[in-house]
Image 1 (cartoon, rainbow over the protein chains, first blue to last red):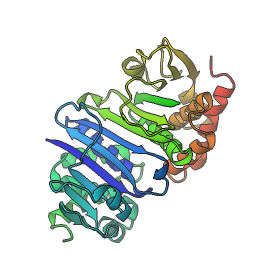
Image 2: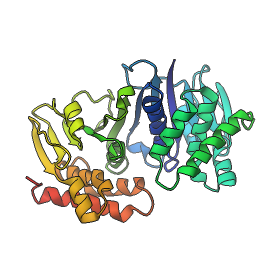
Image 3: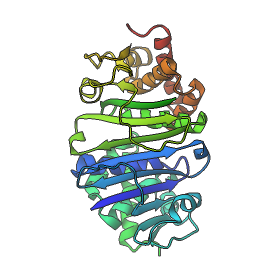
Length: 179
Length: 179
């Protein structure tokens, strides 16, 4: 199985960190190969930011994501720029409080930013909530691998908060999402 | 001018962050295009980590760095894995306290980790010292663009420390490196 994952949102949500953490979980703790990248031009300023990661059991030859099969969308602008054209076979996780549109493909509604604020008091960890939801919905990496990669990557002193965010995302999916 | 930059070191030095910050400086604040990426397999665990960024005045068609023309090397293992084969036309910045080998190509010795520890009391910002040195030695992005990208990217409360680290790297180069 090869996963081509695209994250999109706005600056400050930790979109790049999400992709870095997912790639790290796969390569460091799940014995897989990963290529993580983002490209930007002058239009990136103030617009939708995006980041991708390819995860595969086999070495990855061509490093560019051409057509993602998994999307994590955390802003309406990100949806319009990167998610609106998603193929019908893809799966999309949507932060419901921030994205009004819905795609043609299968999607799961995750109230990540809202719940990060209400349950944890920290909307900043919404991206980690989305990662927990992604792992739970797809099994793209093991939950244990994701926990380790999160602990490696977040600032000291925020470990417990981030693990709670990861668990929150998993619980939202296991209870059937928001839909 | 097109720059293909490779950063290498060990886990925990902020090798990925360095490339992300450089790409951000170029694209967000200097009107250029950037593609930043890292790939890893199961061997990444405990080994040399690396990260690349391509910076160009023109849109970038092929996103993979094939042969870097700039290297920032922060561990001996990283030198052996990624730097030893650098082409003679390349330029390499070396953290002298951590890398014993020297390349065929032109190089600049930067005692980044040592000075980050002695001058700033925080060896953790050695990667930002190297970024300051890189900007000063090459003009790959403007110093102002780099300052803004660093301020966007570092944890709250560490802004002043990181700007001092950037200035320290610049000063080391302007005083003629360590050689």
